[in-house]
Length: 295
Image (tube, rainbow, N blue to C red; front, side):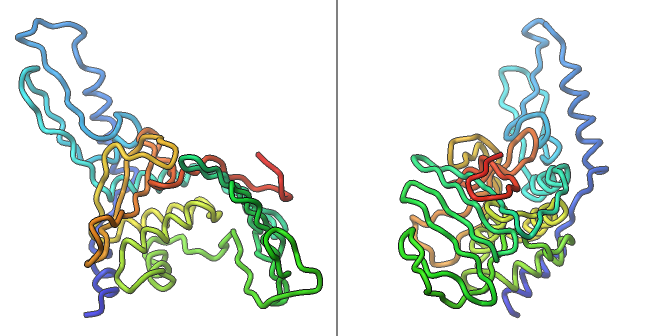
């Protein structure tokens, strides 16, 4: 059977929880945390052991093994479920303001990694000029109009010289808002080899980092990612600037070297907000009117 078909069938069997289903878990956790006695004799003292994420926000996205045990005993830690972590991330995405940018506007994104800051102003429709600003220098991104774009050498345009192009919009207005349809979109437009789920993880990160997705599409992206088999959780993951969060990763392809590093998406443990990937931190994103504008 085709590997992509296997991937799709496995994803279809992965159940997603709803916010209503998460609510009882939140309530139980809040009740337990609020019920602990202030002081007790050592022989009677109990402790609540909670491994993995913080007790707020993504705590509801954890398949928890919560153990009450004597203080001198070792209790099992919580086990994080990647599907529920991504479901919480999707719920968080839906809370963002739903704004549709104008075609003539730009999506400003500031990302960071150790020792480097990158700022981009990307055309909403791909037909207007944009700019990438980073430590290596500024890189103009000429708009693509009628299949032609200005030729640039270094950071200087070459007057009268044009090259063939296709618009590369930073706002993908037709992205699916249904998780199954989003998964089909990812599989159809994937990078890497067929069946390479780590490459699929990179595609998810690319869309989440410097492309503008409205809340419903962004939520569908994370829910679609949750349908990919082989996901695992990375406890205490860090993004590109060291912010601590819960990481979700995909397996590296068969035959990869020992040095191969899988894609890790990092989410805030309290809010579920996407922070970035292992090598890149998304610091700021905004809709602006012209190159150089900041939020």
